[in-house]
Length: 76
Image (tube, rainbow, N blue to C red; front, side, top):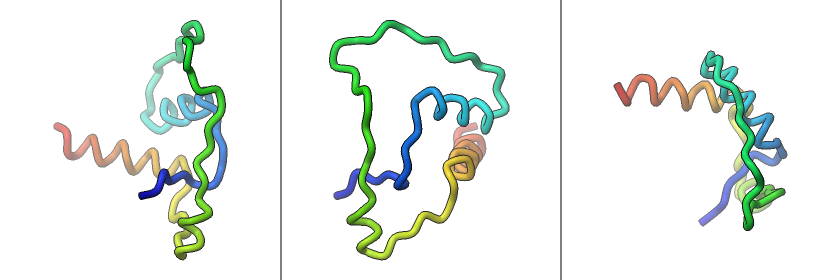
């Protein structure tokens, strides 16, 4: 079992901005107070996946767009 990433790092704020942009949304990010136990930094390793021959097929933006399209067409 792998906790797969894409080999890069992105902040939650940047991810939220990418998702809002991909969805064509006018949503605004609302920040709440930090909670005990919140994870400040996390980065999944792709070393084992790359060693097995895996290569990313899409950028983060492309992956978000494809995921949104999937849910738009299957969750009507």
